[in-house]
Length: 345
Image (cartoon, rainbow, N blue to C red; front, top):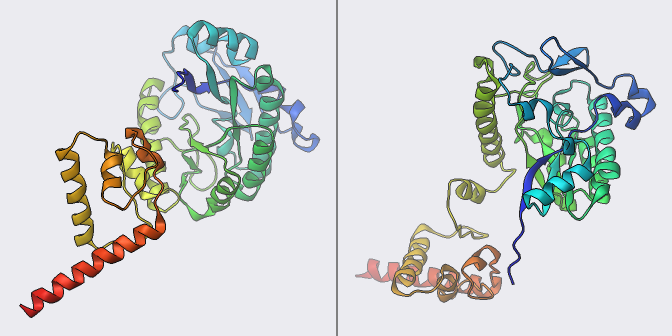
């Protein structure tokens, strides 16, 4: 029976900046970020001796104009009880909660140990305070210090043990794309513990390649934040996913799905082009000849067992491996026999 749920898949909270030191180990508390108001009334903060996000002029963190609710944000960003009331009013059943000020900055810090301490501090605050208001409806996305992959892998364990449903990746670290082999320990750990990873774009923190910052595509040419958001967010995400697919972090089938393909048929071994053509011709002939779902047509080829006839079941196809190998071998044998007869003729 279908269940209708409204889920906010990109909810954000505002984790503490000035109060973050209280959640950090004593040796890093003095290096915690400090926020202040600039002359335009905007909030900025000091970290690693730098101002986090420049304001004004060309670059990755220019001024608005911003709507008033964007400048001030809603109380639910800080107070989970207020957020739950807002969710009730808006008809939202559950929210996937990302961080904001620290979350969109921490993977650009040059001090890897400080980044690790800040990630863990935010994660503690998230699971111990914010999500505790209603763990059924508020689901957390944790932070990991991607500039220190071994520590990031350890932080994934902490997140899994404390109920986080996902961990956030930046689009790049110091301009280094996320398909780089140095990040393999993160992907290996996530796969082992079954932790999803979400690539979240961010702007305002361009730095120096290979040393610090998270780069935003085209942001150096824009003078208003709305332009930065419309260019850096989609294009950086495309670059990140392109590189992750191209370098083998994600399978090629995801590229087809991103391109709009509703269904992708995959095999676990190479199948010659001629036999693939035969299979697909047979498949589409069945599709056009009858009014049954695609999953049924694949099962009709004798190769795939979908379990049931539901149109949507194609995403959960179970391949009967032994039978499939036998069918493929039979197709190959028929092909060889036809080729031999052709040569004899």
